[in-house]
Length: 453
Picture 1: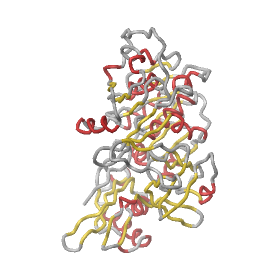
Picture 2 (picture 1 turned 180 degrees about the horizontal axis):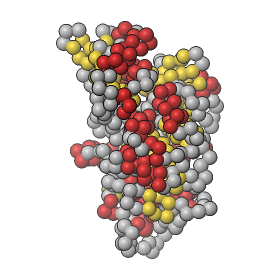
Picture 3 (picture 1 turned 135 degrees about the horizontal axis):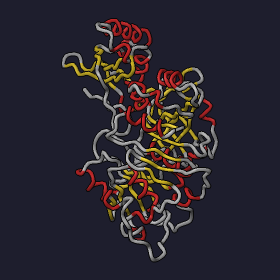
Picture 4 (picture 1 turned 45 degrees about the vertical axis):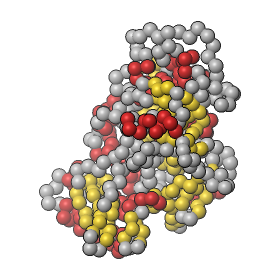
């Protein structure tokens, strides 16, 4: 383990002099960030965790934040466990992460407790941060970061001094952790979401907290727009990441929040934040490939986007060893891109391709066409198995509230969507079945839960 040679998250946060009270809040509690004695909110004090590999597994996000502030610079390694990790997966995760001890909500002192005070100096470590991938099945991969790699993207993005941030993400995922770090280190405040909180309730709550900067996936934002409470917030900044941001969702957010600066970022747990786009257009300009360090270096190889960056993870943990970078230090993100005029567009995930008679179909490409219809709020495309002719393309659609209330109107909408698909897509990409549904499931990561045949 490397000796301590930098300031901890707690020290970076407190180095900023606020002009007003800074706070962090969840649905039930609001804490001032100054003074915040996070180290002594751990039962027994942080010294008892010195040099150990600690798995943070809490139900509440606020407890996880307090543990992070207390343990960075003290623990040798912290593993930030998302709430959807199952008990069955924990044993393997603890093995891969070489975990010594678990911190739960019960280990974080509440407002009324009197924790033990540290009486001796705590050894300092350059703490390793371990994040979990958001795979759709199986045990998530463990990705090794440092506070340096996690904060590298903070030099880009909005000027956010004294901003009040909120995110639909859980802060135990890479996307949510980025927002938390921007708030803590950038001199802002933070309002946390709750896993059981309806979207409308969250929007009302962050509106009352005068939130200025809000982040989420396109799926998060679509749910916000259909919640009936989108007007409860008036953000100065709207950020999208985690999924492809289609032109349709960018346009809808511009109409809803005309006062906001709207940006979409490309990021992954392994590669970090590769770039952000603020011109209001889907995709990213080809000039991104000309970026030079310290900005991430981007290249396209085999149709996939690859990233080399100081914001990237160091390696995977666990056995058998998994490779993270190629011989040139690039991470293959697995996102397929296509150049259209002077702009690259993400057309889907390599592993998400549907094979139709030997021809490849990216569900996201079809969804983008379907979502252009003014009556469609959200769609999900999937491969439907046919025992006679193999796999065919099917789609589920959620209509906007205005269109969903029109009795018998879906037949007309279906015909219009099919006509648009036939005009824009190759024949094998056109859905053979289009079904109206009330809701499309979204995973804990904020991404659409992909349906399999």
